[in-house]
Image (cartoon, rainbow, N blue to C red; front, side, top):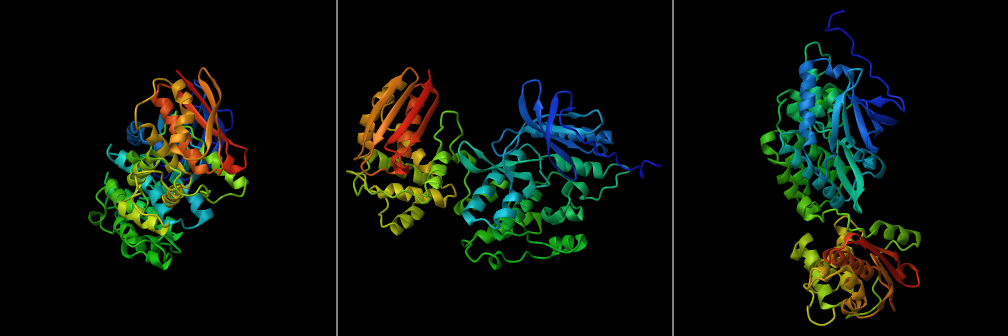
Length: 506
């Protein structure tokens, strides 16, 4: 049997308990695909849970191809970005199969989300796509092109309380497999095992016009992916591979408005530019496409609050409590007008203007019967908190994170406290200066911990979240480390009073 006709080595199934690379103990199989299998494993040297992707042995038959895999993996490992799954290690197993070790991410794939939920609300879809593009931008700057961007390679997880947080998988692997396809004796097709099906492949990939590092193939795939998120189905679906490839190369995609009448004006134009047949007519970079999506719900990664260990307001837990209490809708302010201090109103304005345009805020405020910008003299209307909640939902979060950010902004106004203990000692006075009604008191205080309780005549969860955000940031600025500020009880959710439990290290 000649090398050209020799069948590829069968993939080895790694059983639970076996070692890969001498130190990664397999715990369970997560999934299989055309390129290999992914396992949950444990690094026995440090006890860390990781994901190990073992590629098929035949992909490394050619020494040049294996060298390329190692080079691509090293470049991918050098990318440190919140929306890219980190590559931690690589190697070749005893059976000759290359493997990658990656951070283990709990979550679901974008493919699973679309399959279960169907088309997404436009702002949510653009919020997700904005993160994908931010990740693409980071790796493109290092000379890496994904070449196989598809819903299965995008994970959605929860990061520092932020849901729909994107993690992109498999950078560099598609290029490695394409290299294997071109190796002497290879029996893979040009797109072969790299993509399984070419739904997200660009016209030039299908025609073989590019095998290099042109990042615009990823821009095309991003356009197809955004089309699918908005329409609930792919733009090109044919009964056989030949017709599918022909349609991708020659036919325009069906109009998005045929599936979604509610899309904002201009959004379809962004999708179509990303999916242009000629690479020169697409967005020149991931950053350019991201900028075009900002008006529709995307945001720059550097504009988002950085995840830190100190900001531990558990907004998801609050939302779960609301659901359990059948209070899914935002709490309404029953305290009447004139309940917010001047500094609170200023912090709300500061946070909102960082998230969207003044024109959009003015239109939204008008719909709520409010005038933008708010007055900065005297007590402000409590309805501004409900307005911030509505903006938070419109931005695709709905977890009151903007209110927590406003609380943090409050802590940056005025002089800093000299110590965390002074923050706790002044908390009751600060509540009174922030909110006209309600009374806060110190229930417990000790070295590195404190408990505050707040009684409200008209409890509103939004005010509680603002105050906890303030405490969290003020304690960090006062020198507290590993700060945790948690709203463990809430009058707005049926408890007798608010209870905020706080701890820190010095």
